[in-house]
Amino acid sequence: MKTRLSDDEKRAFYKDGFFVLRELIPEELVTAAQARYRSARPGEDLTHAPEFTDLVNKSPLTPIMRELMGEFDPPSATRHIVRPKNQKPGDHFVALGYRDKDLPYYGTDLHMDGQAVFRTPQEPAVGTPEEIYKQYISTGRKGDIGRCADNIGVNYAPLFHDPGMTNSLGGFTAFLFVCLSDQTMPGGGQTNVLRGGHHAAERFFRWQHSVNGCLGPEGPGWPRLNHDVPNRCGYRHLPDRMYEEFIDETAECTPDGRRWPRPTPVFMSPGDATIAMYHIPHGGSRNENGNSARKSPIFALVNKKRQPNKVMAGNSDHPDRAWDGSFLEFEEGNDPYERSRYALCNMYHEWDGMTEIVAQERAKERDSESAPAQRQGSAG
Ligand SMILES: [Fe+2]
Image (tube, rainbow, N blue to C red; front, side, top):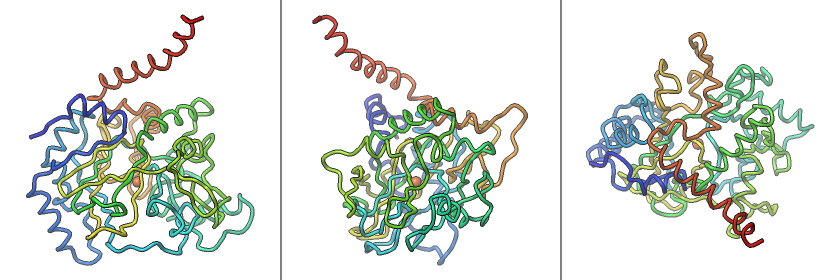
């Protein structure tokens, strides 16, 4: 049984921000989870069904993740994102403010988790940017309570995670995507990632921190909404600097001529599992071409050292708050928001098994950055 990533695998994981483990999950666990989906009653809540948490708790993922990141609570909950087959591009506006059918890459919307999203206007929004923002954030779970940390999006993520409103991102340590359906074809409903985007995200958070300590949307360089889109109320799921950094000659456009970074589809088969950094921008694609519904239970793990006295269920993208967005109690002297900001700016702090590889790779990067200057110096 595989119990750890090899050093070469860790190097690839460092570089890409995600790593696919082929045929890792024992067949009987895959079969039991697939059967649980089939036997579910319409609308049944499978969040806590053990057939899914077993995919981590009874599989090699547990020793692999313990070695790679350190201690974590065995998940007791799962996020289920099922995409039926034969999905078609739609006329509706999506969170980015464009019509679904106009987005490239099967509608993949690269984002980071833990951002509060609200109801997407289906008609072009009217008014000033301030009026559009106010209207947009009044459509969450608490209604029109204004711009404050109590405001909770339709996805249960808070508008700001801390009472001081200095962080608008969640922030766990690791994603696990366990594959239960054939996702080997382009447009198969699979998760896509921005390969290497985790490094850009960490750099960006460090820059935001250096400016005024506010991280995520509404921090420096990252207005939450983009009014220069067809519905005038588009969510900036990534800062413009990151979108621009990953534009290359393969980038496709929306009809307005805007180019979008090309995501990497994570092709998987039942029994495969993907480990990814929290920091990697990612997004699901429409399941236009799959031969079955896309089924991949998703887990969000947090290194136990973040909050040793709290138990994480494994399905939340806002671990500093309760699932419904309410505030949690912390003991005297424990500032959970500061710990989370630190983790956003120091992404390998919670990957204990990556320490050596990260040190080696970053030393190589420093060497290669200083090499041209040295050569110039010696030539002069
Ligand atoms: Fe996500």
